[in-house]
Amino acid sequence: MKPSFQLAAVACALSLALAGCSQSTHSTSSTESVQQSQTVKQYDAETFFDTTSIMGSSFSPKGDKILVSSDESGIYSLYEVDIKTAKKTRLTDFEDSTYAVAYFPKDERVLFTKDSGGNERYHIYVRETDGTVKDLTPGEETRAG
Image 1: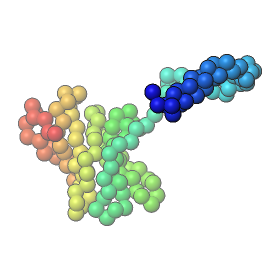
Image 2: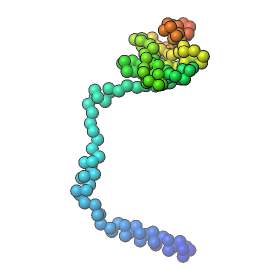
Image 3: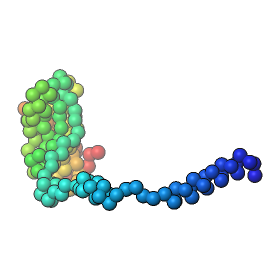
Image 4: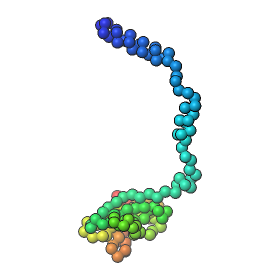
């Protein structure tokens, strides 16, 4: 073995031995105070699950609104959010959840997806500017996407 390697090995062994001989300087009272300050607040199930989720987004052609899906009503519905005022307008009111896809590029029609009664056969729909809705997916047994 080379002398420099031997010296490094001896120094490392001595350091480990001395570290094992040291006494703890932490007091019990400081450990208890750290444990007390790290207590996590507990919530009941109702409070824990009382949340609103918002997902998906698309800017309107003029850039003044954002299209999102939110479950604030209990199921996901489409909403437009005015960027300047933060006012939300609900666009869909179905018994099944609807999920935002996008605005059309040159007008304020919107595309969204929805299944029927939980069958997970999502169809693509267009919501016209007058509020009427048209299913763009042909057939009941067809799944879009």
